[in-house]
Image (cartoon, rainbow, N blue to C red; front, side, top):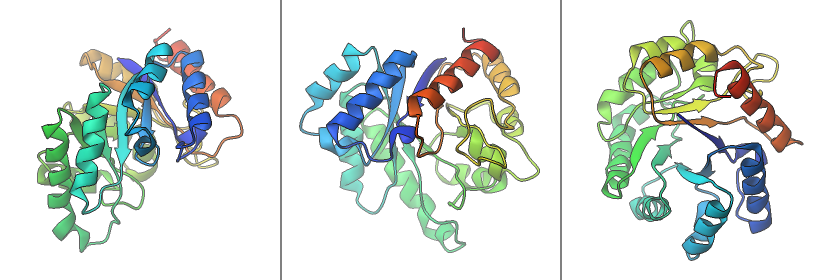
Length: 249
């Protein structure tokens, strides 16, 4: 299992090169193996892929992939997927869409088409279950998955802990051996999703033990909602917990 870090604690939009390079420097210094970017950051680099590739390579980082909020602009998704693939990324994580009942009639086919576009570029695509979005609860996510065959299954441990009411992230992981992407995010009633991994209520020990038992070989991406006054410190604390308490030391 490879451990990556999301850009979110450093900011949702890191299109300014100095802020982005700071994120890469911090991620590398902490010992993360890869980075997950947002579609708000990536287009800045469309005309300079070699430069971005060099920034990653010089810091020993891989591009995990990108979180993308798709629309009806399929060309934008294709351009993004092409760029991720060019830099050796593996994932396109789709997010967004309100959880209204009417959305269930039109959104799943659209999501599936975006997944097909990602697959054309050699990427695996998943849909991000999320508070207030189309698939918030465990039951909603399990309803959606058969409707989007071009998308794989992911587990966001923080949103599952928060949103899978009377269920749990571990229960979902046990039911779904096909999980191919995992976000290590924590949740507590006091700090919501702005919680250092290991300082909330998610059963990470049980989840990671299950993934090891299944020989899961995908990414574990740390994410914490921000903003944070000390993103490097918070992300470092998360990584120490993962190494020291979850057996990645």
